Image (cartoon, rainbow, N blue to C red; front, top):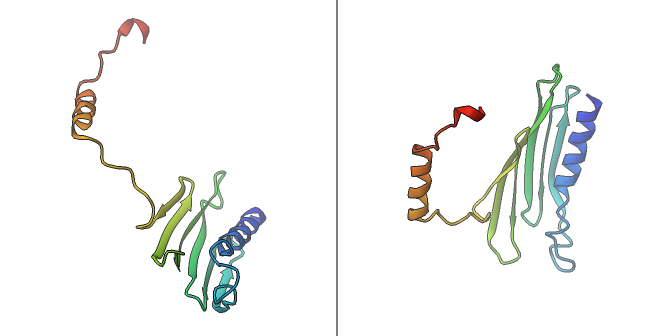
Length: 137
């Protein structure tokens, strides 16, 4: 259980580091924290939130799933908001659990759609699997 509390504190510390976003010199470097809060329970659950004077904000909730089993897992749901250097607003939400880190946001690149001819061939292959040779099974 101590491991999960330490992990939660480490994740909070790592997630709250926005130094790569803040430019040196000017208003960004002199931004101050206008709101900050956190809560950690003895069972390993946690919650935090922060907001800075330059519009950067973030929040997350973490909970230990299956804490009394052989396979406990930490699940964190959260998000971050800030303005990118090019002026576009960034709104990132995420979930991190036993299935990995799963971010969502309009700024995250997406692959192009599968071309129609390739999709037809994939559909055909799925509908017509090769025969199973019983000698080798």
